[in-house]
Image (cartoon, rainbow, N blue to C red; front, side, top):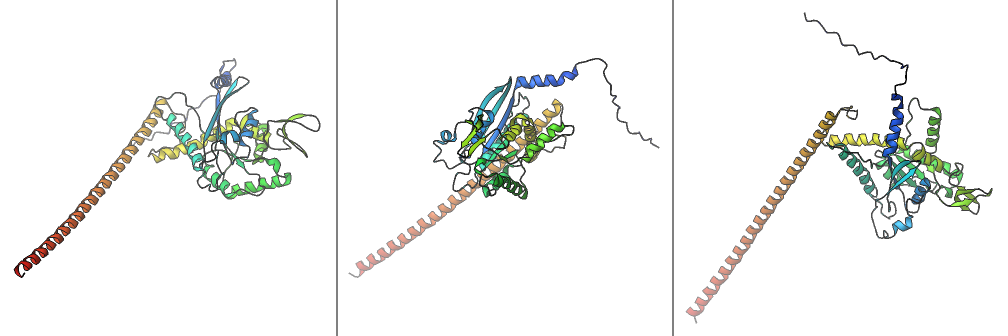
Length: 401
């Protein structure tokens, strides 16, 4: 009788507390120095109709003139009938920390009488950037990967005070699975405070009813209570009611602030009682920029899975875990072979289609030749009959003059 081998017990990993300083506790500082030396990159897309203050808000966020005014950029696009894609890149530095900021504007969105499929160029841009990132990952010899994926989409909503329009719902339903959507009520100082709160609630109800997800800040076990409370406060302000301006105005109490002056008073950009600009800046820049990058990675992994499956590559749930270089190389080879197989299949399909088209043309030419032959033969028969008739008449006239 064969003896059964008992299962091997998992090795016990002892936990040791060091009595002397070794040095690996300095790893976070090493990572910090490396990250600062390499710099950071962030890509944001702004979408909304002309005149909602997109350029002004971006310039207000970074407190500098990064984006020219809409009038300057829209000059020459008056006759355009499609949504444009314009990218503005800037290297900015603060306290020796470098940031490559990529801003993608979409002039023309929602500006036409017929806005059908106005979202297609935007959707194609986001997917194309995912594709470019996937191509970099699949290279056998990879250099530093450049991340140009869209990390956040700032969607500007008209301050109507009513509800989301059909174009808003259609656009968001098509893109919310690919990018972190941050809804923004533009020029919120044109809406009364009581109406603004109701407007926010109606927007959230519309989004929930249509199954549209907006950005959700991740909260991890062990996070500091203060950070969790801050994230919850930021989340509760969505959609953000925003006023943008870099103009300095003087308040009634003599303070000089960024804002807008009206006959009835002053709207302060950096005052949380006046608008949600501070919370938007916290989410986008000061507190949650890396969280937005992580959310982009999660969405990219879903896109990557669908893309590889479409190429015929099967994978298990551990495909995104850390692997050794050999496994990475094997995966890249599998992707490459799948692409070659797909290209071969496409080429065969194209060849067969062209052969069929050629055969159809030859058959059509043959039928045309047969038809022409029949026509010429009929014409010759008719001419022969006419000549014979004329000959008969001539003979009769000679016989009986």
